Length: 128
Image (cartoon, rainbow, N blue to C red; front, side, top):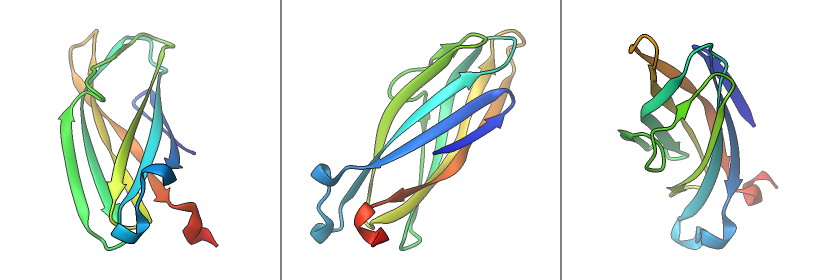
């Protein structure tokens, strides 16, 4: 599990290899991740956009950008948390993801960045 706090927003990441949705013989490795966001600020924030850098073991890098997460742009009031689950399909059994969220300070109206910690995507069978 990886955790990072930036600008008063904590990002916690847990990863899972999805063996039932993976086909290693075809170089298809499905990974899922649960992200939980915690607002430690004294003001409400809203997640507007995200930017991901996804790297596999072949050093192939994909950039994924878009509005919100899983179709939502959640507002987190002071002390609130928000969790979601998403996934990533890699051509290799090992990879990593990192990125950032763009949030809006609901009091000042100013946007700010929250870093997503680097986290590994690992198929358990390569650890033996």
